[in-house]
Length: 103
Image 1 (cartoon, rainbow, N blue to C red):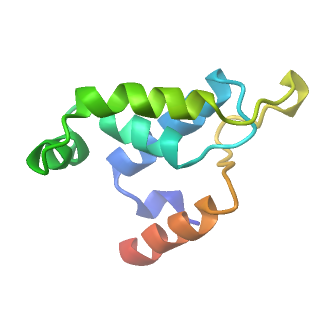
Image 2 (image 1 turned 135 degrees about the horizontal axis):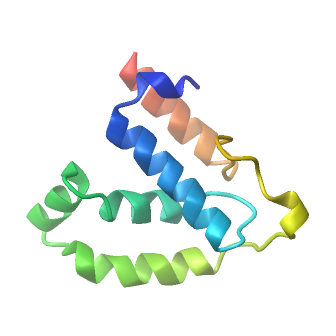
Image 3 (image 1 turned 30 degrees about the horizontal axis):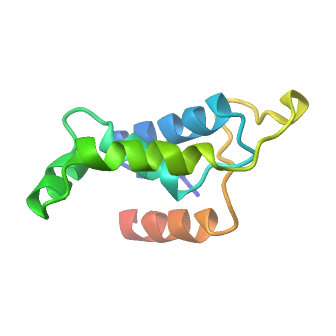
């Protein structure tokens, strides 16, 4: 996947999702980490879209945080290097789809 083809906000969200996973000592980044990062982005379309469909981001965020804390923990020696995108098996197809839309 070519991250440089994503928008700046998308790149920031992926980096934030990875950071959230790492801070929680999770083995992999998953959809909850990514959605939590997107919901928390300032000046982003995602919180605005959620509000438009009647889902206040402030109400969704605690549920996402609780679900993201339930992920698989890993040992400190297994921490991925910064800049590497590590996710569930379902994450690469999702990112590949985003990559296809960006090209």
